[in-house]
Image: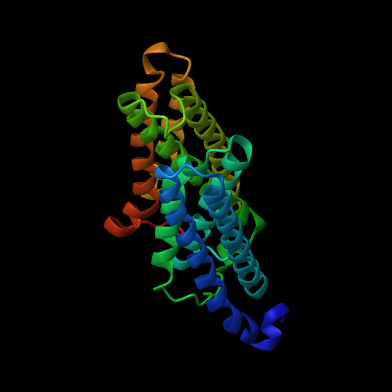
Length: 277
């Protein structure tokens, strides 16, 4: 018996709801303020929005930590857990780019995605399922956490790709310049690719330890490999002139479509023998 199990999960049950709704409320207000900031360019507005993102991220991190402590494993073994963690990773990605580049409302799409994922989580059961033996390894934690971290950076690249296409047409002062958007896009793709590469490596080792082979031809594994190959190609494409700028932005949008299908589409439309669907 460990941690909160000694109290039958009573403490977690009592605080989980307020933490979830508190974080959701903070993100919702932050998104509203970022929308206002797009038209009313005042420093106090984006500072308030950023403070709300920090508050929401802190509450979400605390909730994730408590769930991890009670379960004794990273709680990403069901739809609630994966969407909650993906939402957390998106918020963390936004904070990275905000602190590094001061992107302000340019990260609105990523925060909106985080908010939508979080909102869909609230209608699901937060109950922690028992951990099957094949998942009871640090390799599983590394594989899944790096996977969603990579997905979050790919979502940021999608956002920057959309903004690049808009800015190339509108040429508005409300958005960063094309050069900055291109830099943000390329960095998001590169970091996402590095994290997803590590995810694939640890996943292969985990598969060998659990089932005796490094790769199986299940639909989830095949599409994960396609995600890796697509973004490997993007890391190369940024050095080819005809793919720079608009072409790279379009690839970022298409790539995130592949990511979404791999994450949600396969589980909804197909059957897979992957441990996480």
